[in-house]
Length: 226
Ligand code: SF4
Figure 1 (cartoon, rainbow, N blue to C red):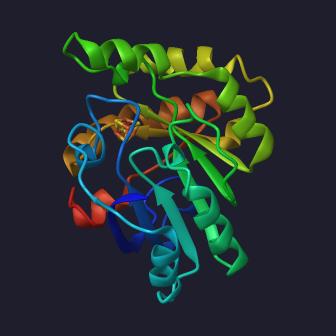
Figure 2: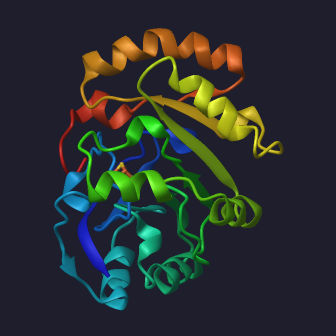
């Protein structure tokens, strides 16, 4: 597996916000969001190849029950399947964070799906913009994910106009209830998040969705490995 970093912190987003967690951040992504907050896993992928059994051994030495398999796009990596299963067998609680464009039969207690809206498209025309726009929403793998896992949706919201797109997107999945949907302000600084949260909180309340903080940024800033 190609791994960018492994670190301990707290989960800063969504249902388990505040939970002490180990983050296993794979490197490599099939998308290129302009606002990617981990460009070292997408635009400029870094990291070393690691044997999943050796990684498992290292993870099991850490006294922390909640493991977040994130990226990049962790579902690109075939060895995420045996790693997640072995972690589950060892009693760990697994959250998988994915953009939802790929299905792979991982073991996960929570599938955290962050579909990418049109607001994520790279600004510069070219190969990545074309590819990003073509594959950022794939309904079939997404259906498989929500049928096979306990799940949450997290939508990154940049502008108020993004909300109409979220509503239109979710209309294709009528069984998704509002309590599974988190709206999250775009931004990697406390002031940016605060400005967007001011209008996003009442909008989330009105739509029956939940507002997700980005607690790790509030606590540690936009710092790698936190
Ligand atoms: S899907 Fe996630 S990791 Fe990939 S480019 Fe977008 S924000 Fe970055």
